[in-house]
Image (cartoon, rainbow, N blue to C red):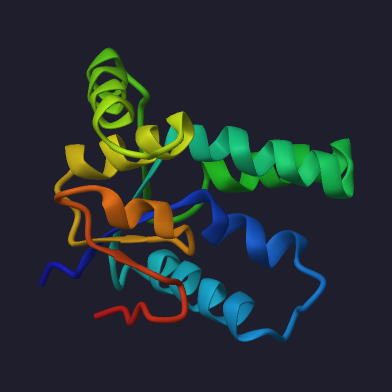
Length: 145
């Protein structure tokens, strides 16, 4: 049985790593989604851009050694499929930037999600709400299965 397909925005990976509020509901909800991905309860995608964003933020906040370790773990994250930032993704992102109020990095994430026709894009960034064809749910609202 195929689970719900999701696109995990970079904040889903970043928040549990750098948040000072380890017990917050936002951190807990991100961890629930990551566990659902790891256990194969959802079909999960993210962009190769996510690796860049996660490693960059962890390096800035926690240091180089931690960022290297996190980058390696992210590459091996079970059941997570990376979408390459191809020419087609960039063309689609450019169209989104031209037509909507969306930042370039968010446009790449949205174009990546649209390329796989995911059921939901899980992100705490409401900018994705302006993208036709993207159903965004916050990390706290998302329920796997």
